[in-house]
Image (cartoon, rainbow, N blue to C red; front, side, top):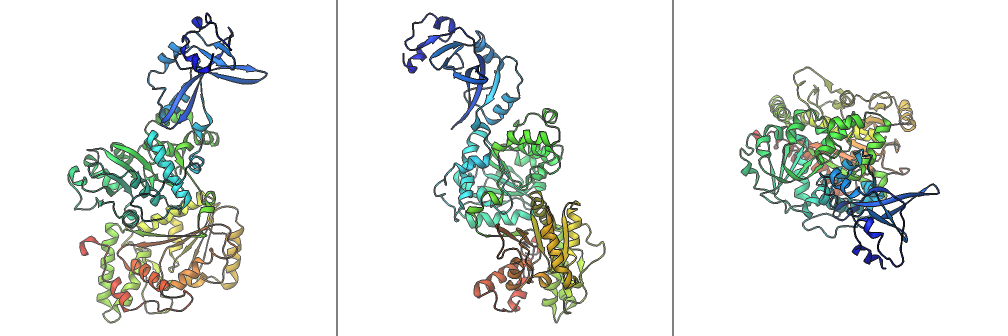
Length: 611
C-alpha cells in the first residue's frame, strides 16, 4: 500500500485493525498525542502527532488529520487515545486549527491542558531579524524614488509578508537604519486609498520630517497634515488623501472622527508614547479601526515589561493575553524577559547597526527637520521682532544670532552678539520661557537614550556651552554613564584625558563638545553616534567636528544626525551649508554667511500665523 492510499482508511483505529495492509503492520501500543503547530505561507496550522520514547529520545509520527485517532510510525500504524478527536474539537472550539494567527499560536501555547500537549515547530518562533535575511528584495517598488540598502529591502519584504497573517508587527530597528523609508516603501507595496488612507501618528516635532520624506521618496502619495485650527472637522474631510499625518495629542482630541472609519494602515512613530496601558492616550488610540498596525520604536522596553505588552497588544490585540494574565506570567525580571523575548521576537524586527554593517556605508547622515510647537514658534517671532527693533543697523546679524540661540534653547540669552565668542557667554536666564518644552531637546533625549540602551557612545556638538547641562538635566543619565564636556574653558592639557576616559569607559557615554574648541585635533572613534544639536554656517567646521568619530581607526559605521527646526534660521543654515559644501572642497575657507543668507533667515517663520 502506498502512502497516498492510507487516506482511504477509516479514521478510527478500531476499524483500521481489521484491514489487511501491504507494507504496514498494526500495533496496539498507544502513542502520546501531541499537537504540533507549523508555519505556512498563509499563517499557522496545527497537526496531530503521536509520540513515543525510544532509548531516551522521542520519535514522532504524523496522523493523517486532526480527525484520525491513529498515526504512522515509519512502517507501523499505532493508535492514539480513542477520544482524542472529540477532545480536540471540544477543547479548541475558539480556534480554526487549520488557519491560526500568531496570537492564536501564543494563546494555544499558554493553554495548560493535561489531555494533550502542544509544541511549536522551530520555524514558528524564528526571530524576525533572521526571518528577514531569508527574504530577497521585493523587486522594484512602483513609485519609490530611492534605492534601498539590501537589509532595508529585506525588512520591507518581511513586513509585507508578515502583515498578511498577523495584521501587525513592531519595527524596532536601531536609530539610523531607516525605519521611515522602510515604512514608506511598505505603503507603496499596498497603497492606501482616499477612502481608507494610512494614518501616521508621531510627535509634533517629527511631522515635518515625515512630510518631507514622503514627498522625497514617494511623491505620488498624496499627504494631508491634520493639525492646528484648520484641521478637519468631519471624518469625510480626512478621506481626501492617501496618507494623513497627525500628532498624538491631536489624535486624542479628535478621536471621535479618527475612529469613525477603518484606516488601511495605522503607523505609530516613537511608539513609546503608547507604552503606558493606563494612559488616556493609549486607551483612546486603541479605538481607531485599522487593517494593519505598526508601532515604530527603538526602545520597546523602557521601564518594565508591561511597556512591551502595551505596544505589542496595540500592534496585535490579544497577542500576549490580557494584561492581568501577562503580569502573572511575566513578572519583571531577567528570566521573564528571556521568556518574553522568545514569544515576541517573531513579530519584532529589531536590527542593530552591527547586524547589517556589511550593507551600510561607513557614514550614515540623517537630517531631521523638527517643527516647533506653538508656544515656541510664537516666542521665536517675538525674539525676531525685538532684535530687529533694538538693532536697526546690525539688525540682521544680531537677529540671526539671537534666533540661533533661541533654537538651541528658549532659556538661553546673551548680551553682546558682536563680541568675539559671544556664544560662549550665553547663559540661562529667568523663568519667562520656563514653560516652553523644546521639541529638539526632547528628540535629542530620545536619540541619546536609545544609543545608551544599545551601549553606544555619543558625541553631541553645540556652539552654546550650556546646552550640555540642559540635555543632561533632561536625560538624567545614571551613574554608569560617562558624561563630560569639552569647550573653550576646558584647559588644553585636560582635553585628551577626558577623551581617554570616554574611550576607556566600559559602558555608554556622552561627550558634549563645542565644535570651535573640539572640532579638530581629537580622535574620538569610541563614539558611533554624532548629534549636531546646533548648526554652524561653515560646512568645514561641521565636517571637522563629525570627523572626530568618522576617521581612520573607526571600525563601525557612524551615524551623524543634524537636528534643525523647520522654517527657522537653522533650516537656512542647513540649506546654505549644503550649497557651500557642494560648491567646493570643504577644506577651502568659504564665507560663513552672506546678505542673502541673513535675508532668507529673517523672512521665514515657524509660526503659521506669520507665514
